[in-house]
Length: 341
Image 1 (tube, rainbow, N blue to C red):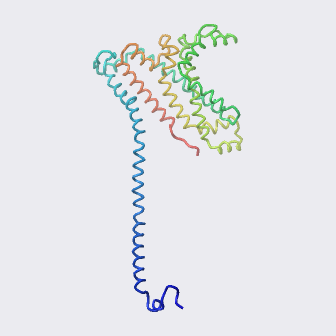
Image 2: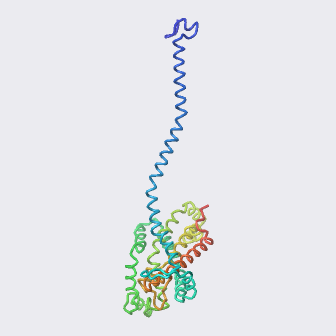
Image 3: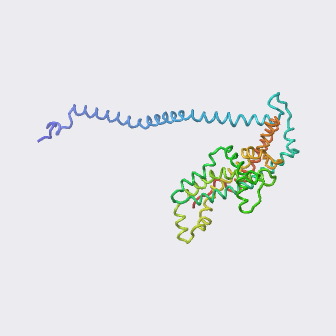
């Protein structure tokens, strides 16, 4: 019996004309579907391109803000500084072009030479102590003990406090009077009162101590970030090998912190070479230029003696000094290199 929907003639003599017509329609539909499938990826690619361009355009306003800030507060002042360095200008009368006179004056400016010496001495005292103290504190509080978060907050608190407020507090604490807070405590253990901020030999180390106390919390957090990045498997392996306590830190932890150490050393050196706030608030560059740094000397020349042109020249000198020291540090500290392999 013939299958349902097919006549005996169809089965014996082949498909009828209606079936041929239906086959042609099905073939055409299949061709259209094939074309659509072939074109679909191109449409997706076009949509993706349009979406990508739209996403890029949406970021331009945010980038534009940063570009404007950079131009207004960095690029334009830098160009103006270079221009002013070739002129004599007191910020009141018109500028007078002097050529390289300001740069020649750098060679015979004795006060500038003292400021350079003080700046380098300050950096040599502050950077090693700051790096070591912040690392020690970071290792001590990098433990899963109760209350460690509170200690981290307390150690970081001076860094977010105004340098003016901190210097006013320390100016009172470091009073040279025998009844000053620090001198009084020293007197209890039989140590004579110190002159601190008013003695030529003690003034700069006193400022270094205040600066370290104010900023070591920031570097402590950087060390903590480096410590958190060390794989726990390495510490476990050190314990298996019998390295406990400080041996583990000396032979395992500290060598693996080389990238962090390089970064902290570089940025702390840059900060030390630009020290101004603590000098201005605690000593005013005294006594007898004992704490006058290059940054403070630039301020004096610009706003005390109204020599903006020469102040810009000294600023360029400081910039070159910082760049040279940073390049040397990057060369020998291998800044940015290192892994845990």
